[in-house]
Image 1 (cartoon, one colour):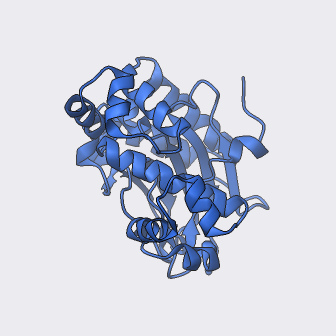
Image 2: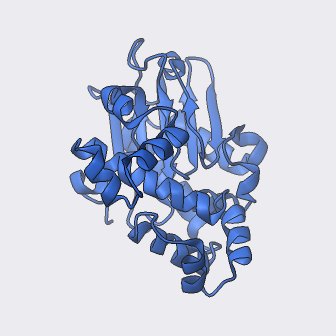
Image 3: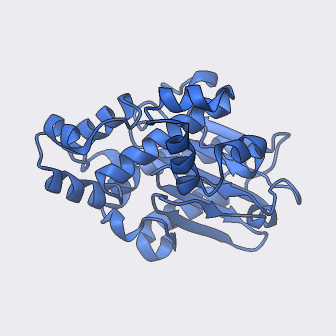
Amino acid sequence: MIIKDNKQFNMFPSHVGLRKYIQYYNIVFPSKDVFSEHYMLMPNACGTLSLAFDGNTVIAELWGASLTPILLGTEPNSYNVLMLIQLSPYGLYQITRQNQAEFADKRLSLVDIDNELFRLLHHAFAVSKTVTDLANACEEILYKRMEKHVVSDALLLATKAISDNHGQLQVKEIARLSCYSERQLNRLFRTQIGMNVKEFARLTRFNYVLKHIQKSPCFFAALSQQAGYFDQAHFDKDFKAISGVSPQNYLKTMSDFYYDGTEIYDTLSSKED
């Protein structure tokens, strides 16, 4: 079983060859009070593979793409070690090849969804002695799931357009760029991401706002304009509808919310080998 070193949080970028599907690995050694009772995961349209050791057993879960906030609270404090494999919006489809609409906003036992993947990841978790060993072992396992490309090229094009425009594209424009009808594109998004195009674009814009608040808190009037909201009232309303809190309260209590760490590639060197 993995041995704790002197770091409580250990974050590793994925190999460049996997980065389209896997964002990073976060290996945490929680202490009794590191996570508060209000700790919440903010919706980001991405799936996650979670493995945790509670002192007796390894608990492996598949977390579908999140559309709404998930209250995690102090649950992680009960684990000796917790590993989160943060996926891209379509990474879970590439790995499981299963309809993501059935997974959205759910935490499911990995063994019930993909017994082979559970067995392989469980073994890696059990035999790894260091956090680096664990991240590398998971890379080898997941790399084999990437050999056959199953994500639609139209979906890749559409999600890139949405991301490049920070979620500020209309569905009809996204459909035009992808050469699909709106109906076809929505069906594709629900199957391979777990939500429709409008929901994905809305969460993309929301996470663009979160990133700016996290990096450099600023005047919300300016940020709402930058993010393409009609006015600050619209910005405040949409932010609260997605997150459950106002932008002002989020800013005051950011430590109670999980930030997805997508800036990892700005601060950690990539593993190119």
